[in-house]
Image 1 (cartoon, rainbow, N blue to C red):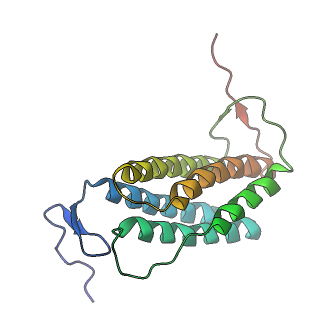
Image 2: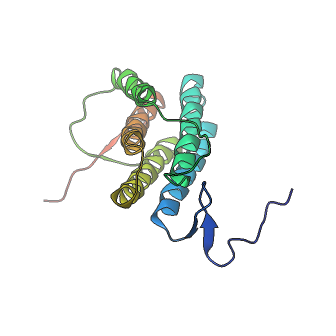
Length: 181
């Protein structure tokens, strides 16, 4: 099987369901950003030694593939796709709560950095926020499952807390933001 079809050479592609759209379409930005995020999550997972976190990130990558497929499908697509569930959001909230139990209270904004793993968490967080914004843009014009932006919103929170958790685990000081006066 050839990986290239040449069908997209003129700036269009097909959504799941067959509809042709420009590659600059908001829907493509949304699922393309989810794909970018999934790649960063893979990098993050490959960087972390703690098996429980690696397992969580693997589950998150699976959910991101689900989100990408849902965003790549037209609302009238007949293809059976995996679904996102409320339990997927509860999974993230439970993980956030467990990590937060051992973290010191936040007293200021935190500057990203301090360790490559921490920085990668923050990059994942910001890509996730961008995916959320693109998803909201699609939702303004077309039907989008309500759980998708909710999941992305919670996932960005997860990456923020994971950055703090990894700082704690790696014994790296957080860098509080002290605005100039």
